[in-house]
Length: 129
Image (cartoon, rainbow, N blue to C red; front, top):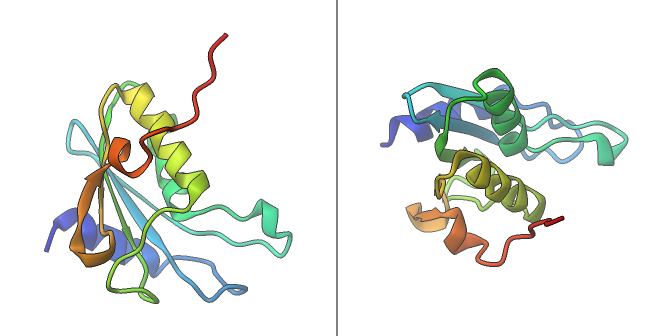
């Protein structure tokens, strides 16, 4: 099994999901082999909840701003056959890909697939001035 996916599995055990009972873990691999993890964190004011992917990516980009994100693995024990990032996370991953100047690979999708964010979200939102 991919070590990055193993890190996402471990991260899922640290999720705080008392409302959905759907724990998710994410692991981000930076170009210099640093791995950062995150898990979903729910709040009774549901809009304040944050997905595992955005926790991990935000931490990675804030802590290692000069590093480029290469891969992200996602896992939920409630969906061990694989999961896909929600729409907000897809846009966030696409934004991190632009910042990293790298087409981020997403590991842990249904069927054990690995795809690049440009394949999963071919028409990502962009803001131009």
